[in-house]
Image 1 (cartoon, rainbow, N blue to C red):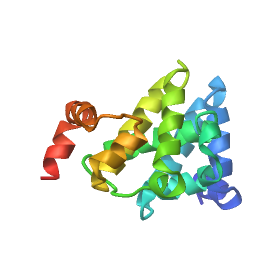
Image 2: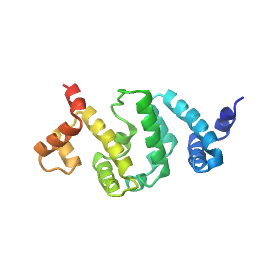
Image 3: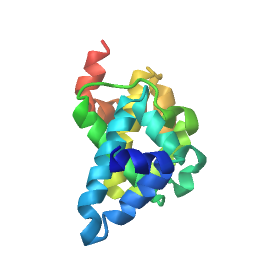
Length: 173
């Protein structure tokens, strides 16, 4: 039996993630924390709908949009999502748990608020990309997207989206 197996047997993914986050802050345990993170991420990537599985394992489906960016587990999930996107480039999950847990408009408001804080701006930009991918893959009408983004002019919305996500939009035909 490996240490990873023993630890995984006694602790759930949420508890492991908490230990890893703390372990990464202690110089003497960084190496062990990284090793455990690798095992945890590998398990999550093997699960069907892995970003959704990880989101639920971190209990983020129980966190409202107002607290989402303040929750260290959300940053940890975003870190996993980065690794997932690196491991599976071009694999787009059409509807993630973000789309089913939160209303688009509430999530967009949280993103806009998080962009104003220097501590959460980078995470907000990454999440904005994920949300816009969801909107594109859902093939929502431009007027609906304009409402979510609080843009009153559909032409302005088209310019914003076309500039930032041209290749994704063009691939939809």
